Amino acid sequence: MNQNELKKALAKLPLGDVRYFDSIGSTNNEALAWATSGAKDLSLVIADEQTAGRGRLDRKWFTPRGTALAFSLILRPTAEEKPHLTRTVGLAALAVAESLRRRGLVAQIKWPNDVLLNGCKVAGILVESVWSGDEVDCLVIGIGVNVRKEAAPSVELLQFPATSLEASLGPAVEPEEILHDILAGMIALRPQLASDTFIAAWEKALAFRGEQVQVEDGNGNTITGKLLGLEPDGSLQLSNEGGKSITVRFGDVRLRPQA
Image 1 (cartoon, helix red, strand yellow):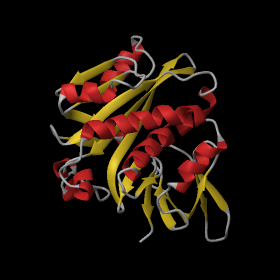
Image 2 (image 1 turned 60 degrees about the vertical axis):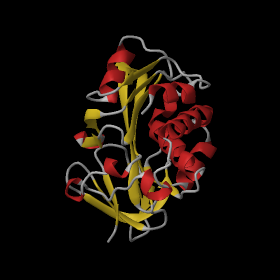
Image 3 (image 1 turned 45 degrees about the horizontal axis):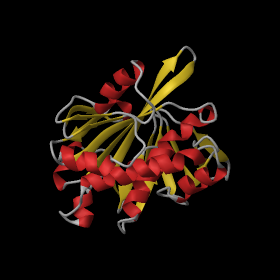
């Protein structure tokens, strides 16, 4: 990614400071350390390559040089936002999905933290917290987007099918413009975080809504049911065979459509 093009693309956004790396272990690790030492709200870490990128559940996030967007945004939540921090992953997912819809693509959100194109994962989100006592001081929102075909891991490494923007848009896709649109989308959506319309928009974008899904928890238990939508905190709402409503909380969970 060209630094000059990147600076030009981000120039009009109300960001804090920006740190750019040709190569880094993990943008989230850098952002967490920076947040702890006083980074401003909306400060950004972006890298052309990650050598130790992380996804949820300690999975590796594959980011070869020049093939993907890998960035982490630092948010310092306001008093009004703090009761709704579990919705932050939806903030990022909606911004990514909307940036792709603007380009004529049908993007969906696989709860809780992936964005899909044609049923395949094109982006992932990892939200981590910095605490001050028993209160969240700031959040780090890590986002990875597969831009070039080379960014999608090989089949043997995948737990869910993957794709890239290039596969849908061709080689002319401009990562700097997509980064701008995602960040602008997050900034625009942020004031709506506490609203019912925010949850409704997230719900509308859910993949597999109305379909039977399986959710595995960290203890190896499997919950099966029809995906109904979201609870006010962003948790998943299912309905089992008997019609009973089941709430699946955030955590060590994996969601799949039922075969």
